Image (cartoon, rainbow, N blue to C red; front, side, top):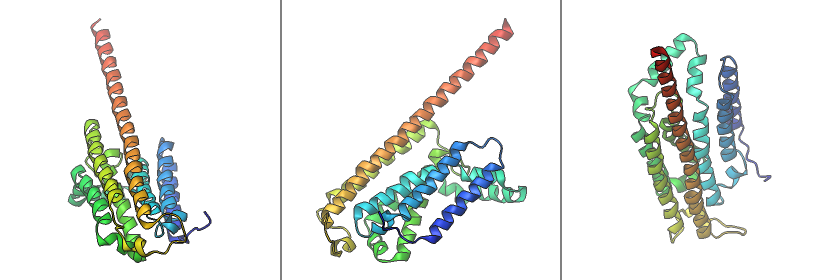
Amino acid sequence: MTAWPFEPVLWTFVGLSLAIYFRAQSGIRGWPGTRLGCFAGGMAAVLVALATPIATYDGVFFWVHMVQHLLLTLVAAPLILLGAPVTLALRAASPPVRASMVAFLHSRTVRLLGHPLVAWITFALVMWVSHFSPLFNLALENAVVHVAEHMVFLIAGLLFWWPVIGLDPGARRLGHPLRIVYLVTALPQQSWLGLAIYSSSRVLYDHYRVLERSGGLSALDDQRAAGIIMWVGGDFLFVVALAFAIGAWAGAERREGERADRRLSRIVREQG
């Protein structure tokens, strides 16, 4: 708990992001405080993953590395998007800047990246290719590749959750039934990845295999623990997301029913 890495660039980036967000939302009447809380929570999750002892030991224990990846993709990414930072930027920007942002958000590239199918496939490919290719071991040996890996995981997570959260423009927002399908189909691929790591009879990454350990788990047991975290922890977070998605669908149906009741009451009064 005392092995904190020195990450001034990351702390500065998170601090500036929070300061800019807070300043922007303070000038907009009626901006929900829950969105500020979600954005701050997402930034905090990034710090926990990359600027705490978790980051110090991600190259020593694979299970710690897996916690780090889940924090970036399944905690930080959705919380940041629940803060609706793009919508806030649009509302706070000057008219010329807003026009440029809108043009960019409607560009072909953004529409492609924000397509739910593209986002789903990108997320799955990033998870599988990164864990079952030489790139993972290279990231453990090379600091620059390691930083790039973290950025790719966070970006893939943001792309994946963008159509589900649906607060910011750019992505094709999914209707409530399709959100359920989107998440339900993503859950097993996350489970299979964790199960594949857990079930491997050999150590997948040379970095962990040759690393001298003063005690604790063996390299293979460490890998199995990482697989269980990916499998069980990832499933848990997806189930939580599904619960929120189902709750949002039920709330939307209830509000629609209330609107229909009000319309019917108004018609009855007018005819009476």
